[in-house]
Length: 165
Image 1: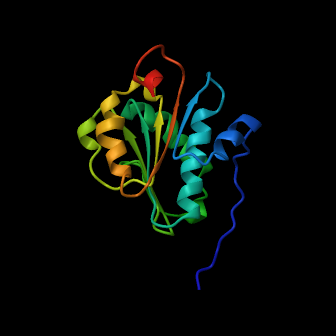
Image 2: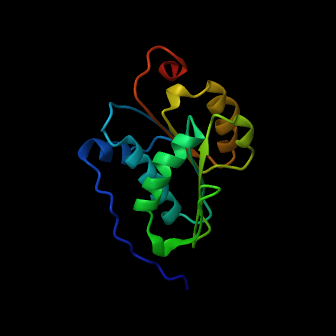
C-alpha cells in the first residue's frame, strides 16, 4: 500500500489565478501584465501535477536558458516540497519526485536541445518571444500521444504568432 503524504503549499492563488487553475482546457493562454504572478502560477501548476500524478514528464520553458535558470529555478526551489524530491540536479535544471514524476527546465534558445520525450505538461513562459516552431514542431508533437496540457504565459507583444493562436 502506497502511503500518501500531505504537504502544505506555500502558494495561495489570488482569484484571477484560481480561474486559470480551474480551467479544464488542455491549452490555456494567459496574457497578463507584469506582477500578475504568471511565473509563480506556472511553477506551482508544474509542481502540483508532478505531485498528484506519478510518472509525469513536465517541462518549464523560457525563451533563454539563462532566464530559466535565474528566475524559474529559484521559484521551483522555493515552492517545491523538499520532502517529496528524491533528486535535484541544478546542472541539468531537473527535479525528480518520489512518485517518478520529473520536472525539467529548458531554454528555447537552443531548439536542438528540446528533443523527443512524451510530455504530459508544459509551460511556455514568455512564449510570444519564442520562435513558433518551438510550439508547432517540437512541443506540440511531443504531447499528442500523452494528450498533454500546455500553459502559455506572457505579456502582450503585438501582432505575432502568439496573437494568432
